[in-house]
Amino acid sequence: MRLPATLANALHLGVKELRSLLRDPIMLVLIGHAFTLAIYTGAAAMPSAVNRATIAIVDEDRSPLSARIAAAFYPPTFLPPVMITQAQMDARMDAGLDTFALDIPPNFQRDLLAGRNPAIQLNVDATRMTQAFSGSGYVQTMVMQEVQAFAQRYRGGEVPPVDLVLRARFNPQLEKSWFGAIIQLINNITMLSIVLTGAALIREREHGTIEHLLVMPVTPFEIMIGKIWAMGLVVFAAATASLFLVVQGLLAVPVGGSVPLFLAGAALHLLATTSLGIVLGTVTRSMPQFGLLLILILLPLMMLSGGMTPFESMPAGVQWVMQLAPTTHFVALAQAILYRGAGLPVVWPQFAALLAIAAALFAFALLRFRRMIGETAG
Image 1: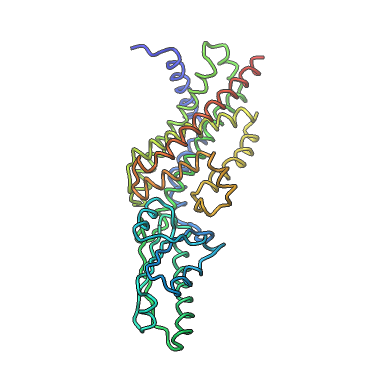
Image 2: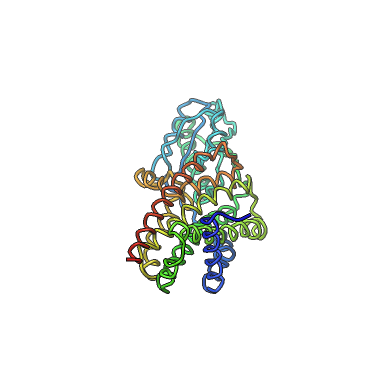
């Protein structure tokens, strides 16, 4: 069966890009390092600062003491607590809305003043490792301080101990590597897809081979599609192998949800980021310029997407702007699928947002690429 001319041209141009990549040892080493050693290194060390952490409180006691405990959590360490019911607690944790959920049982104040040992349950979303480790200690310390001050005021004697029962959701052992490996994989998918696609275009401009393509019966659309599918395929294959061999194999990180669903989201994300690579390649005229511009683009995409710090910890203006970035939605769907086992009914808004952003970036990249081709031909 003969392929349509546009599809056949795009296929052949993509194969040309793959052959060119195979002759570039530096790029091959970069790809190998990014999806092996870099993943392992990213899993080994993670920060643990607590800033504007989200906390919800289930107040079943409705006493002055429980109100005092709730009032102890305030910015900048924590966001103002959200008062919820016990029925809402699990649903909010599953949706990733709360990093901590504090459950104050009925008759807590009465049991404390009676000299009993009441227990408060603290649920922690352990996928947010940047805050879960030290944050649980912060919560315990703050609760104990409020209980001690209250008991000394009303009893004037020794304060009976209060047990804080810790329940870490999605990561019971609080393994930092579980979080670090996935986030590093996500960041490297973003970085390599932009670098490879932009570098492929810059290399053609520097070597003058873009003029050779202009005399061939191919369109700018076919040339761009060839670069996008070829570089996207390389990153997709490397990320898939890394997920199975490094993340699940070497690091033994359990995956809670559907790997094919995650890979479908990765494919959409790659369409967006490879298109962004084409845009950067049309803006710059040399690899040094491309590298400098890449720093300005990559750092915000990776640091402000919700991967390194929870998204709600950022200023409202930054949150609004980052809704336009593909990494924000890819990080959200990847964490929901791989950590919490979410299915398509949960992550479809992220898929829809990624599809819209990818389509917009592709259209803009095609417009820029056609303009660049026109200037070169002229």
